[in-house]
Amino acid sequence: MLTGKIKPLDKIDKVILSTLQKFGRISNVELAKKVNLSASPCLDRVKRLENEGYIERYGAFLNANKLNYGMTAFIHVTLDRTTTDVFKLFKAEVVKIKEVVECNLIAGGYDYLLKIRFGGMDGYRLVLEKVSALPSISLTQTYIVTEHIKQDSGVPFD
Image (tube, rainbow, N blue to C red; front, side, top):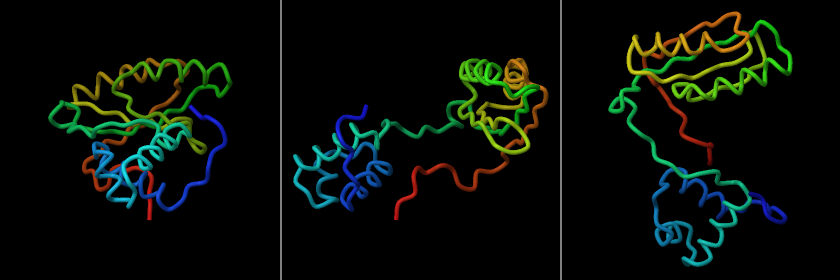
């Protein structure tokens, strides 16, 4: 949603972004206090950062255990062919599996790395069936997470 010329980020913009990343529900008045601006110029900056694409979306971090998706695994996927049509078909189908929370095309020994969430080993087996049914897969290799040491906390800021 880019409009016009993108202005380089200054120190205040970076503090706004860092604060919103940590405290997405912060009011504009509180945000303005944290960055030493009045409310109106602060809101103008936030709107600009949204319009320039620095802020993609707002959300909440949910407790996966309470929602019966407390287990995580990573699956390496190797395709039988790496052609444009196979990549397109795989991408079109993998996004339909709700338990696949991330899918990344990887350079290296395999083609994709999937991050999946599920509620238990029965749930894992069902997800693996869905993943294995994806087009052109020749091999999958799964790594079950036994402990989350550090999870994605967003873009690192100083």
